[in-house]
Length: 119
Image (tube, rainbow, N blue to C red):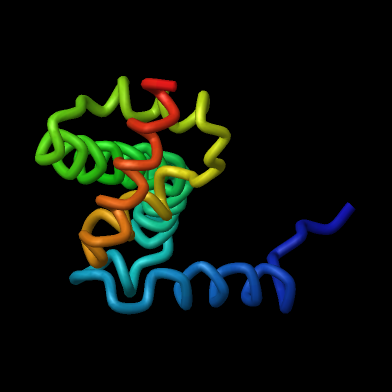
């Protein structure tokens, strides 16, 4: 059986990998083996960090809500508990945006939550 020497399919695969490595420094964008290693590692980082990004944003939202709630004399955990008891269904992303950009609305939310918590 004759030896398979690559051909169009192999060249296509090689060019695809080198295109993915475009913009990398030095041999990582020119040499196939280095490019393959760099691209594999970068794809791994991209997959991992798509999940890490979600965690980081949630931490940021919680920190913002906590800061705003504490300025009204309430902790984050008590605020979230009172929100659930009051039946207000706002997620952390929206609450953090309101707390950062619209203090008057956040104050109204705090007051309504405190009124329901006392009642």
